[in-house]
Image 1 (tube, helix red, strand yellow):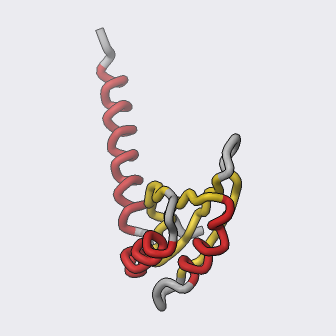
Image 2 (cartoon, rainbow, N blue to C red):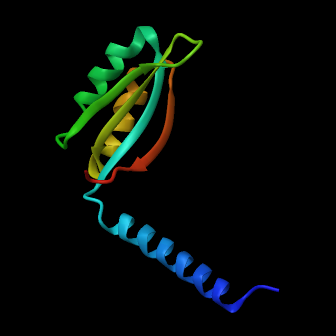
Image 3 (tube, rainbow, N blue to C red):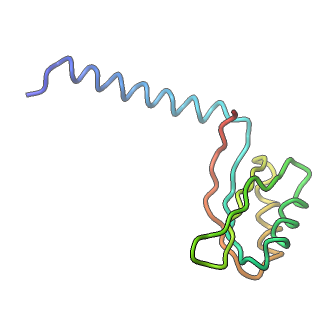
Length: 108
């Protein structure tokens, strides 16, 4: 049998988690992070396509090798409005690659 106080505390925790999640969704300033995996020889071509895409603020935040392969993972930070054009430029300029997840970036 579960004590009544335990259920109340659990409901409070669940409510706090939901409020925190809603606050994080609403507080974003429209910035996204896009993960792109390309072959090592295509990194410069991919970076050029990413930077030239759109008038909105788009930048490569991190470029790191994928372990045990010849691929490189790029993490790109961009405005929500520039996502479509950035994806078109990346797919149009590269022969091989993978588009990863897109996540909302929290302001620092």
